[in-house]
Length: 114
Length: 114
Image: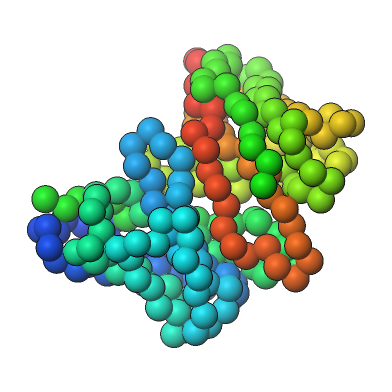
């Protein structure tokens, strides 16, 4: 089955700890993205990557870091510097088809930091 | 990117057509209109997109006015599973690019009534 997987579905951490969220895709897509969603709100872009070994900051990158060592993987680390890390995190990918914004989303990881 | 305006919520009877409006009066000539939906606690799902002409696929139809200042997403025979938040997004598409993420507002919460 082709698609995007995120694990785990629910994640609990203590304040002050770094945590890494996994995102894997087997769609052979060039571009990958991380979004954050807070209750009752839309999605906000954290980081995106158009190609392996390259990534760009989105609108709310502070307190987050990413890597793109393989085409199929784009892990997100939520660092202790992120002031309000509790949120629903969504990963997406997109084929690089000359400007399409047709993005495919994973099921999300709900992170709770106490 | 042009700003979009959508109603906060709408109801529709099961089996009827659901018509979701979106205003984008500041849209420019090379900006596309994209529609996504998000079922509760899941990742968003791409529905359809268009530039000038009306578009139809297996999920929905997109009607864009001649002046392109507004559009309507039509779900022809709504079912209970179509209850979701629907996002209208306007995005500039650059040839060879198009991989720098989307901005999701609050969307329209469509509730299908049995």
